[in-house]
Length: 505
Image (cartoon, rainbow, N blue to C red; front, top):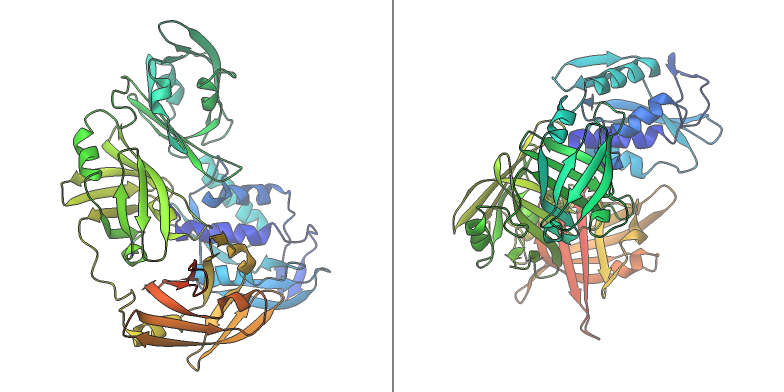
């Protein structure tokens, strides 16, 4: 799940690694500002502080304290200005408007927050390097006796997910791992030899290799260790190609439920009976339920799930598994961009309780130890004022509270979201709207109207300015929350539907 606390580190990294490789200090208001070489030890450590970097050896034990001031530098490493950010949202906005031909440096001192809540003042690059390195050396969630756990006895694949649940492919295989880093996968008729290794890191990954024989070739990956006890080993791998996540679970007894886990039949039957609605999503203490208020969820028996609103359909997969904590519900929705709200549903959720009326789920982050809550219920959540019949003034107040960015734009089935990357939109109460990036400014107008037939509308007009001329329309408002505005328009010509979603920075 995306954590705002870690997002700040990720964005700081993005700023650091574009800084000039020159290490000559820049003197500004008697403050010495050190450059950071892209391939330096500090830069490499900073890369690992981001959970969004897909780095298997990520460092998740520090955060930064705001405000932070940055120095803007041109291509010649000369100061062009300064910028102070006060929170994650402002940092994201700052990042999206940086001149791609320039660079930035951070103004010290800054405060770093350690995993135990201790606040430490950092005064220069070397101190920052030292504190990250020290944090990293404390290790992660992988137990120190992992090798003993892995090499003791035999294991069975009780869950394997790669785009879809493929657990049944490993039915009948018994796995053993020897202390000399060899491995065997054995059935009643064959034995496949392989190897295993741990990467040399304080938070090592499990590297498996069984050759090219199907289906064992699917296990030939560098697996991040999520959980390891004497009874269960849970692993995941984030693809460097498309960013999808594969899951692999070993347990001491064979899987008997075709990927659904033993003792889970009742939960599967409950989940696949009729439709569900998100009644609660609380992430890091923030209630984000209203991001899903327009969607009806249907979990199918073929382990696909679909979330449908009046203007959008989101497809995904699901699986019920077992772990040391009991039943789990693994959810994987297709997402568009890193800010898609459905990314927050994609996780391995612990099932705390379920009935025909509610399914209660919880997830404890392996990074900061925070707890997220997800509840599915039979009736729509009613504490949001969004939707086509919402309050016009409330929508206006939300719009002008931006800034916003284009989270999604689909034109007659063609996803054109990338045309608006790095644009930030600011709506003014006087009816004007400005879209800006590092090189361009586009002006337009907006107005909220209501219709007795189909509720709220948002009318946008940007003239002939590309690419925003495609937004010139009278958009139906399908849903809105304090952080998300979903729009759609049905063409009067060919009847195709366009969808546009703004998300707040």
